[in-house]
Length: 123
Image 1 (cartoon, rainbow, N blue to C red):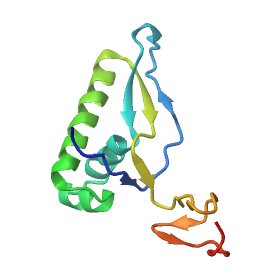
Image 2 (cartoon, rainbow, N blue to C red; image 1 turned 120 degrees about the horizontal axis):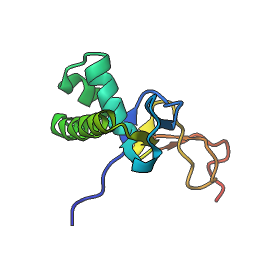
Image 3 (cartoon, rainbow, N blue to C red; image 1 turned 135 degrees about the horizontal axis):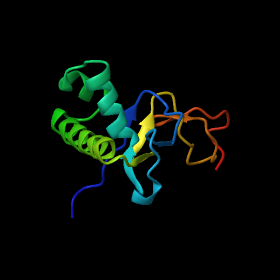
């Protein structure tokens, strides 16, 4: 059993959840691309970052980024060649400006491991 996957850092929020080609072929289903795969494609292919720079930005190793990039390219190519819809899912990511939930107060006032709640003594 491998270890649990850590969340990958994603800078941009995707506005569209399902993309389709001009010729609608809904009988074939869809290809699922996660936000981390899309972010890797955006950084390396669209913005032109080297893999090591993109890996630092996503807070993963270069080898992990290469695997994410390979899967993203394979899925995008499959969707384009076969004319299948692309469905974008969140997956295991954390967004750049996303605040986490405080485990004590159950409110969105936590950033990293430091509780930013006013009443830190309450439970």
